[in-house]
Amino acid sequence: MKISIHTVAKDAIRLDYHLVEMLKHHSNFADEIIVMEGCSSDGTFEAIRSISDKIKIVRQPWGQTQHLPSYHDLGKSYCSGDWCIKLDADELIPEWEWSRLRAYLENTSDLLVPVRLRNFYGNYKVEHVNPQRLAWPEYKWSIYPNRPNIKFWGDGSNVRIEGKDLEFGRSGESFEVHHFGTVRHAARLREKWRTQAIRNQKHTGKYKNRGRIIPLPKWLFDLFPYNWMEPEILEDLKIYPGPYIDIVEKNPDEFTRDGFITYRHLLKKSR
Image (cartoon, rainbow, N blue to C red; front, side, top):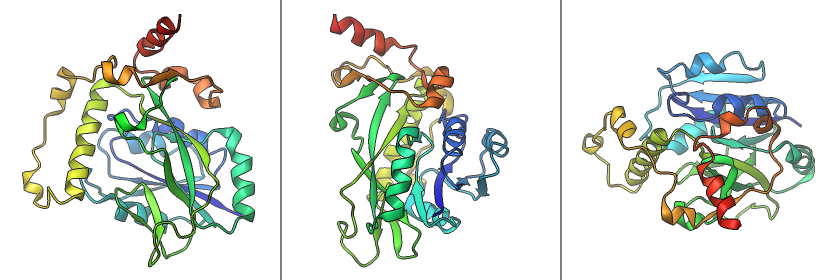
């Protein structure tokens, strides 16, 4: 059985995704990794092109406010594995899940298998545990057999079987993924959230006319970066008890962006 992972990336270096570490990590697990690289101008392509022979990079223009499901479907079309796993550039499957996941896929008759997200915040020692505040999903249905009738839908986070309801083929089993979407440079985090808001509004129809989208200069986000000590968010944080993914242990600075200010706050609060 062959497993394919596919992901998308555009200007991942400038936007402070953990793409390089994510690809290094999963090169030890997947049989192939497809990266839909959106013709970046920040050195992303150059940073990832020599990581592993397992990685196939497809350079395809992609605007960050465009409809994502079709772009993920395109990435899926390059996969040659029996099973596909769609991951974002800041999502990592812990190595302690690898053998269980592979064994499960070899024997299951399920068609849609979810990942269960642990959402880290600011650094690799702190979790955001209330998905209602930052609206992180608890699960993503993003593990599936490589079949033409399985397509991405909505915001591109999940797959479904064409012609069936959303529940059809779904598994009761799930596999942990560590999500570092809010472990990045504070200005780039603010910029990411604005981009996501525009994309969501476009998806719901507000921005059918792309001319109404007003781009903001990048330096503006540097002047007004995100505040890690947002009071409402602090209420929803807890210290992650471990264990840590091997690549986090090897390169902890890559997974620390807040200088551990939230971790120290939680330590002080617990005394």
